[in-house]
Image (cartoon, rainbow, N blue to C red; front, top):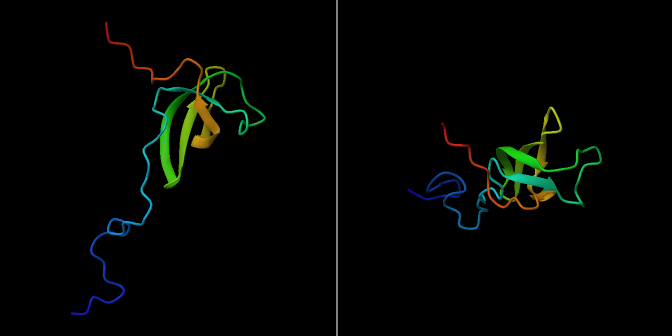
Length: 99
């Protein structure tokens, strides 16, 4: 049997060492972030936002997040390049232990 140009050894992307790999998210759920100055939307509340969800990436180089400010009744979607860690918040918050 001739291998031919359409024969694969496995699922697409897994056998090709040159294909881009997905990177893990930079921010974790519960982590406090803020918009960086260059990419901040014009209509935004100041102050930290909590990461509520990590969304599926569009490609291997971009990651999207759902973030929520206590001062707003809604969540926002932010690209990873638009947000930075909030001042003094370098680790994700953890839920309090039950009493």
